[in-house]
Structures are given as C-alpha cells and as structure tokens.
Length: 439
Image 1 (cartoon, rainbow, N blue to C red):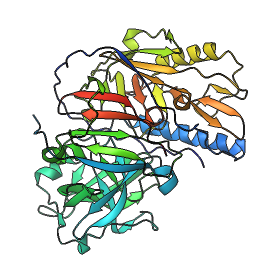
Image 2 (image 1 turned 90 degrees about the vertical axis):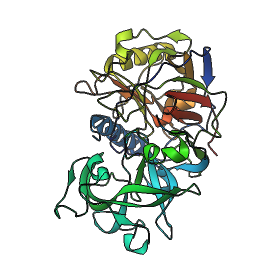
Image 3 (image 1 turned 90 degrees about the horizontal axis):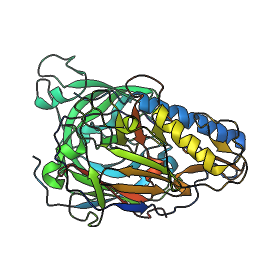
Image 4 (image 1 turned 120 degrees about the horizontal axis):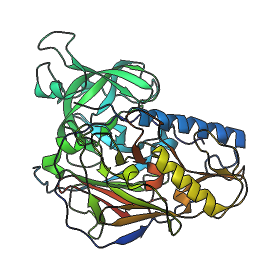
C-alpha cells in the first residue's frame, strides 16, 4: 500500500468577524497512540520510497492551490453521528469518506469530505472522464432533482459560472481540484449523510473531468463559504461539526463525523477560529509555539503570527496528508528534531529530508495555540515508518519557498489522526481533544 495521493486543496473563504472567546486554562492534550504508521509493510523499500515521493508531490500540489477559492447563524437542534473511514483502502484516494444518500429514492455514494473546499460535486450519468467503474448519480431517476438556472443566486456563488445555453439555461461552472479540472452543471436535490436529516442541497453534476485527482464518487465541501455543507445545513446543524480521523491504514468506518452542537465533547479545549477575508473558507487558528520533546523550538513570533494581508498563519486541513510548515518554521522544527534524535540522517525521500535507517528514539512534537491549548503528538503521529526497510521519516515537510502560500502552515490529517477536532463556526472556535478511533 502506498501513502495516499493528495488532491489539491481548493480553499474557499468567507469574510467574517470573530469575537475573542473567553480565555481558557492552559492544558496539554496527548493524542491517543494509534497503531504504528507503517505504510507498505512487507513491500520493497524502493516501492515505499516511490510512494513517499508521490505523496510528497501530491501534498505540494494541494498546498500550491490554496489560494484558489469561491468567490448570525441560527443554531440547529439536530445532531447526527456519521461513520467516517479513510478512503485510501476503500477507493484508493487520500480523502476521508462517508456514505451519502442523494435524490428520491436515495442513491448511495461514498463521498469525500474536504474542510478546505466549499462546493459539492458528484459524477453523473454520461460524464466524460469520470471513473468508469465507480457508481454515479442518475438525475433522471430522482423525482426531486431540479437543475439550477442561470441568473439564480446559487449560480452566482459558484466559481467561474457560465451559461452556455443562454439565459434561463442550466448554470455551469469549472473548477480545479489537485491535478484535475472539471466542468459541472449545477443542480439541487435531497442530500443526507448516512442516516442524517435530508436537506435540499445545491451541488455540481460532473459533466467533463480531466485528470485522476477527483474523488471517484464525489465530494462534499465543509468549508465556510455559501455553498458548503455548513452553510447549506446551518438551520439543521447550526454550523457546528467535528471529526475523529482513524489511521489512514484502516479500512473501517471507525471514525465519526459529528454534525450539530448536540453530542459534541463538553470538556474540549478550544482556541479562537480566525477569519481571513482573502481566504474566507479556511479554518485559521493562532499557533503561538512549538516544542520538540520538552524544549521550545526557537521560531520567530513573526513566522507564526496570523496576517490576512500576507496569507501568513496556520490552518487545519484534513485533505493534506502530511503537515506542511513555512520554510523558516520547518527548518527550526527539523533542526530541533535532528538534535534530539542524535543519529545520522539518511538520504531524503521525496519532500522528506529527515529520514533514518537505524532505530531511533522519536521525541514528541507539540503545537500550542492561543488559549493556550497544547496538542502533543506521540511517535505514531510524528514519523512514518517502513517496517520492511527499517526507515523512519519525520512526517512533515517545508511548504513552498515563495508565492502566496510560502508563509502558510498546514496542520494535516496524519497529525490529526486519533483525536477529535471541533469546528464551531457559530461560536468562532476550534477545539482539540484526545480520542482513539482507529480499529
């Protein structure tokens, strides 16, 4: 098994103001230890190395597109617990997936969940370039499907809308996702995740796909923009969700996506959710410090500070596999990690420049956010191992050297596995708590 290939992040943002939350007591949260992360156990080391190169390149591609994006909520009283699984074992994709029911009668699809994307889209019958073996949605078989027309408010909310059929025709739009591009027609139908409450939902019906990065059975965006799941179901779920991501090596639906304020952890420690008007859909938080083991990493405060004008800051993202830190931040973390390990560093693999082919003691890495709230990662969330080749690599890398994302830190899914992350947009906060959900 090779590590998942990452689709490109399409980040959508909506300018909002947040009110500083009441300061909470400092707390350190230690992530539950999951099974050792050992991709390609039993596979030749050359194959594992190739998979790391591919994953690193895919992560870089996703981060490179973070600049792309789409142009008081009522708190809902419902809740829904939706089983979630890594897509790697099930669909050979890096995203996490849930079961969705679309249309009347319901047609079931395994859709990817992406907190850094707003739009939803699914393959529809007759799609050119969609995965031929994957299930697709048949609009003609649903009694509740209707096309969204040009000139409608929904049409104005999608990226690059067009009306090839003229006024009153179906609204079309184009989008780039990772290394793929697609054309879709906008439609509306009843959508429910697993056994949750059905809701009228606006989504794209894929018409033409170029490339292989698009999740084969579709995607639902959980960003903060007007077409995201949060926005379209705010009267049902109150703009609140959380997830616990099981190890990407698992094939079980042992994680949960919790929708709505009811049933969320009551003792979870939170940090303020920040808003960037240039990237309104992304989930920004204020990271104020990093430790390797018990020692603080000497990172200039300016390298971590949130700055909407320059794009500097830290986001929480479940679509990127390995954490990407801005170049000066990563260099400081890498150097501190190497000093602590005190072993010869082997040759780099792809974007990973801190690898060892000898047994080493792996220190924890801690991220501290405003609050303060500290999340401490154990070994299994810090390094990625090849049991067959005896190689371990620090599962983080440097972001791009220049461009709009050069100052962006992306806390990715491997570092989030086996703990719950709460996104409470209604109250302007993000929370972290320990939770073992890998089975």
